[in-house]
Length: 280
Image 1 (cartoon, helix red, strand yellow):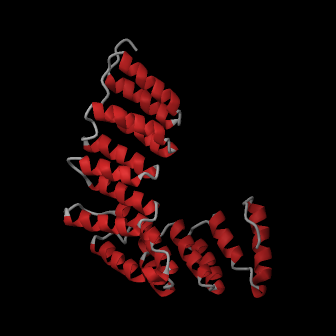
Image 2 (tube, rainbow, N blue to C red):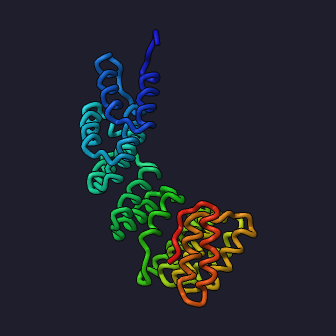
Image 3 (cartoon, rainbow, N blue to C red):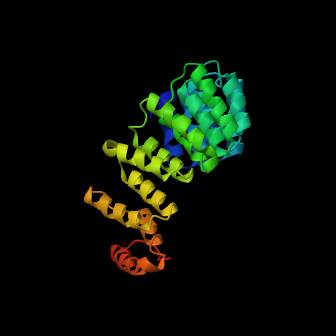
């Protein structure tokens, strides 16, 4: 190119990141610096996404050092990308330090930190952050509540699931399939098949294949084999083609003696469709 600028350099950096070649990205970044072009928030935001995806903590820490020198950690865009990198690399305490030094935190920053603590299983901190987010007047969305629901996987968390469900309804998030799916799974794992069923029945307008599979898994968990077969048929009548997960679930429901013949028939169908599912 006869005339290069920071935007064109950033485009190439983004290209290397998209194909997962972080080593070439780092080399290109050095070439950009040597050529006298200034880094900006988009330069680091793009690279940090790739670092987070690849869990390359050491490279992320090097980028952090450069960003500190350039005072770019205080920008909400690059700061959020840095926060996301530490959170996805499991270094949530370092993510929290970045968060605290950001002069402005938007809902993306809050969601990233909550998801990070949810990922490492820190229930107390994740819900404390949710309360702080609400007190700060920052809106919550599906990215806020979905990670929290994954933590609530036992009967002792039933009241917490109910509280979170109330917040979800208050903010009108139940109409999002990703949220409904997570609520179904959370209620099921808290031993409340009835509540899971109620959410599934109310999600008529936003059901996707994952919704059907989530309810199928709930029936399977609660040993309702007849309902497993029933929903497997229903999902197809509503135009949803079963995937590997669907077949694995329904065939698992055939492990009891009275359903063995159904399992053998389904396994024949699986083989015919070329899917990799085994009969228990």
